[in-house]
Amino acid sequence: MTHVFETMGTVVSIQPAIRIAEIEAVFADYDSRFSLYRADSEISRIADGSLLLTDASAELRDAYSRSIEWRSLTGGAFTPHRPDGVIDLSGIVKALAIAAAGQLLDASGDWIVNAGGDVLTSGHPTTVGIVDPSDRTQLLTSIRLDGSRRAVATSGSAERGDHIWGRGEFTQVTVVADSIIDADVLATAIIAGGVDTLNAATSKWDIDVLAIDLEGNLFATPGFTAAIADSLAH
Amino acid sequence: MRARAIFLSTAGSIAVLFLGIEIGNAVAAPPTTSGTGSTNSSGSTSGGSSGSASSGGTSSTGSGALKDGSYSGDEAQTPFGPVQVKVTVSGGKITNVAPLELTTYGGRSVQISNYAAPIIRSEVLKAQSVNVSNISGATYTTEAYLSSMQSALDKAKA
Image (tube, rainbow over all chains, first blue to last red):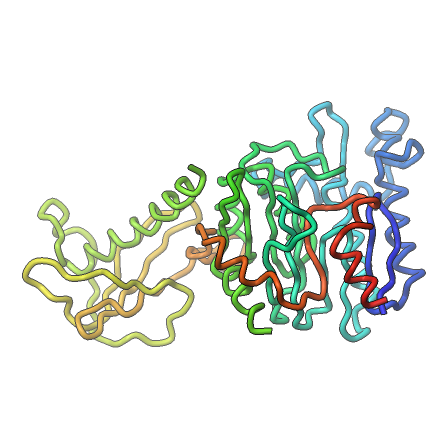
């Protein structure tokens, strides 16, 4: 059984359909606090100057400080600041919500949360498809998660809502990691920072990456290539 | 061009490592570089090494075949700290190249061999038709979800 619901301008699927109300509430809470599409959200009130960042909720200040930390770790490739100065935490909020949902589901056997194409699992072996950015009705490939990794996140250069300003070197980047926050933030950072960020990220973090450049060339870490090969055996 | 840029940056790192190996081996080392580095020939065979690419195609040149044994290369400086590798020669060929130490960054060990390298599209496309449980892609809108593959999967499991 799968439960599907809309939130954050996208769609979330939960398998199996357990703790539905609590999980929907987690996403709704993040959305109401962090959505720049809602004029009454806390982040919108900071953007319009009616609320000072220092007076914001602990949750918002925590998300902001995490984003600043990621900005430092990624050499500025990931940033919570739009060019016009508005604080935009959408690059990390969905991952925070997925992680919170995962905490609710832990100790409930095997489960998978897929929020708008970002996937977190309980850690059981499973096979995840990767969308072809040139034809989103097709799979580019698929990877086997052998149980040692839990999170797969994909970012695109034309991604809705995530406000990626990049060097335009990659059209799509998929990151496999232990944490959905690492995976999502680093996928966004590599789209924004290009090859330099890709090489820095694969050296600094224990992640696997598949990146597609403007000409359709593919680049993969050894672990990602192995996961593709492994998916053929299942 | 991009493929080349990534490949070259990766190749550059590997070249640094192999330069160290060559010096350590004192095989085909030009006179200008002889005498540098600390060759550590233990003669032991490889054991317990992991995580590094093995090297084929490094054939001996000139008079000397490679002598069996294990050899440590010079330490190479990388943006993430010093890296040193050990090469194992067996039957006159390099059979293994292993990092003697991995650098750390923020307390985590760093795999110097984890660069994203070009892969062939046809190899990737073979893996399209397997049974997938979920699909990862750039965030879709609510409307786009309706025509997405994830939507079809969710319906199938509803």
